[in-house]
Structures are given as structure tokens and as C-alpha cells.
Amino acid sequence: MPTKAEQSFQILKERIMDGTYGPGHRLVIDQLVREHAISSVPWRESLRRLEAEGWVEMVPNVGAVVRSFDTDAWQQGLSLLARIGGYATALSAPHLSKADLDGARALNRQMAESLAAFDPGRFGHLNREFHELLASRAGDERLVSMVNSEWARLEVIRKSAFWYAPGRAEASLAEHEHLLELIESGADSEAIETAARQHELRTVEAVTRYDVEVSRRNGAVRHA
Image (cartoon, rainbow, N blue to C red; front, side, top):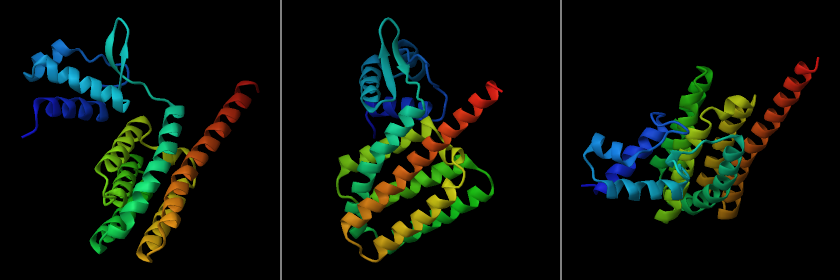
């Protein structure tokens, strides 16, 4: 059975991720104690853990507050994920079973369906599942936990990033297939790590480029 500290951590993290506790929301320990009948000590431990993972910040004279995220935070997070996720995928590749790879392909097909249905939220969630699956056999629990935690943070920051860069979603699906082919063919770990890392970095570049284009167009309209 989960400890009280683990229970309180999961409650807070799930409510941040589903938007119940949005950016700027104050997390008041006394209120949490009353709502969940869990003492203050586990809540304090959970808040410290959430702060360490980047979900919460401690504001002087205010207390624990759910962090606000912006485009820069998303870009930095995905750049970090490109490195640690690429490495985890390379370590995981030799240990992925046929069932794992079939599951990854099924997720990629479902992503294509959500793209056709203009469902960016589902597309983003499936994309996260795809990459977490490919990194899941790395044999390093701490590394896998870091990868999964970063994906969770990114999902909260910008759930529909692919929709901000026209054409990026379709390209991403093709890159997923290429990555699966590399793994199935027994490609060396460096090739797999490079492909996985570049895949994420291309998304960063595409979204950044599109943000710049939108800003320029908006600026031109304002000055017209």
C-alpha cells in the first residue's frame, strides 16, 4: 500500500496535470489536511518533491504555488528530453520485444487517426506514450523516471505543440516509423540515440520557427 507521502504526492501531481490546480494556484497545507485527512508532514514532503521536479515553486510570503510555464520552458524541457530520452531509447532498444514494437506502431497509427480528427490533446498524449514505451526497457529506473517526469511536465506546459508548427505532426509520424525500423534492424546504439534526439530537436526548431513567424506577422499587422 502506498505511503501517506506517496498518496499526497500523487494527489497533487494528478491535480496539477489535469488542470484542477492551475498555474499560480496556492497549495495550502492546512486546507489539504482538511480535505484528505492526511497529516501535514506528508504534504510538506510532497511539496518539496514537486519543487525539485519543477512543478511547484516556493514564493516568499506566499508559500507553495503551482509554477507557470511559458514557451521558453517548453523549449528547454524538450531540449533536455532530446538528450535524456535519446539516451534512454538507445539503452532500451536491444531489450524491446516484438510486442513492445507492435504496441509502438499501434500508438503511431492512433496518432495518425487523431491527427485526421483534429484532436491535438489525444495526439500529444499518444506521442508521450510512444516515447515512454521506447525508453521503458533502459534498465535504469532513475533515468526512465526522469524521462517520464519530463514528458509529464511538457504535457502540462504545451499540450498541442505540434499544431503550432504546420506539417510537423505528419513529419513526426514518419520519424517515429524510421526510429522503429532502426530498432528492428538492430542498428547500433549511437544511430538510435542520434535519431531519437534529432526527432525531438526538430520539433523544438519547427515550433520556435513558427512562433517567430507568427510574432512577425502580428507585428506587421499592428503597424499596418
